Length: 569
Image 1 (cartoon, rainbow, N blue to C red):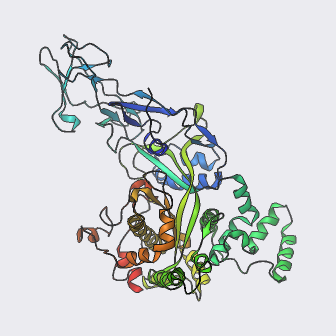
Image 2 (cartoon, one colour; image 1 turned 180 degrees about the vertical axis):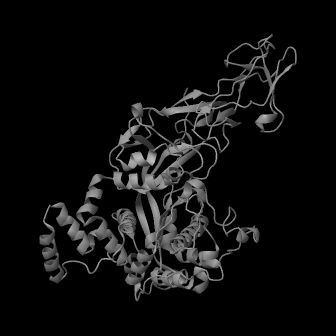
Image 3 (tube, rainbow, N blue to C red; image 1 turned 90 degrees about the horizontal axis):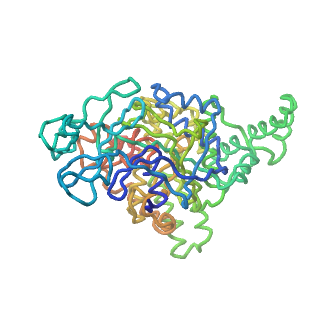
């Protein structure tokens, strides 16, 4: 059987063990056929991102050791679709229903005793178990005397109200699908229509992935994570991290790789520090875990901006001061950025992004509840990530560090003293520990910062979609909260025409930022929404594939409340 779907539809809707609708029937995906194994992957960043996403299940013991295996170095293979081979599917469940008399048959071409001809319908209910991730076809009893059965739907989607009867003697054989224990021994199966959201939830990951290993090597040779961190702390004043003078920590790590003794390294660093333009000034001092997170997010920024970063100052430099565009960029854009509490907005014309799925769950959508089932490699060796690798366009948005530091202080959070933009960024880095997607709301500086960045990103995404003339589901976010920023990029799904974000950046950015500040920020569901935290589907939530934090850590109050970030501007 051949059916045609777009690559983005397959990435989000045709994954292993997922049920799909095709040609009027129900099918289960076995696997992608002969997918392409990709090697140009930033493996370290991918592993780190998957571990972060899967940690909620590890904490509750619902990942079957997946996170521990990744920590121990388990192999990860990234697979992309081979459009010439497609996806292998099989009918599921194998129960077909006569459209005339509702008899249930085990074959689609079976002759029905009622004499009706034509295509039969297919049973669309399946049984699943959230504790182990299994999926099974319902067992349908037959009349012991007549060996037949018909199904009677009650007019609702409730599986418990479905009746199975003998079409000959009219005896009721069973109501509902019964209480069927799962083979794992941890409870009974739940029966739902196969397209119910609880039957299958793919778990995804997004990373900035350079188009080649050469780009990854360039970052490493440029001083790696320490140099990227210094570059971000300095405000990314040079166009790329390669143009940034090396930092003391970056040079130290480069010398350590060469096997030099510590005392020799210290002497070389002292000499380099006295040379004009030798090495960058003091590095920020952070605990090991915080430094790793800060460097990882800085590397994400460095990789994203390595090839195609366009700044507002680049627009300014390309125009005459007295021209219409010159006035737009110098006056209106500058004013809009200040009013919106932003330090900068950059256009990334070729944003290298990997969007992948590493497993699935059944049942409760909340991370950590149902069993996380990772996609296993051949013969159970290693793990697979089913992915799309693309270059798209993005806007990189950074909040003003001085305003953020002041806002955090006004919210009652203690952070080290600061006196300029760099020291404000460093003070915030020293004070924050960003919570995971599943951490409960806590009165911490990390939670406050994440909620601010995340809420601002969702408002920016929703209003950007309007100004770009597209569906908000065609945009996604990628947060770098430790560096007060986020990316809004064109996703691999939906009907998005490249150039939409570029057009907004080049001609309409001031209107977009004014809309973020001045457009209606109350919710149609207030006061209930505000009483429940200030975030819901009517005001801040976006589609789950667009949000890395499962629509958690959000509140309009952080942006527009009495002490909101934009109330102070």
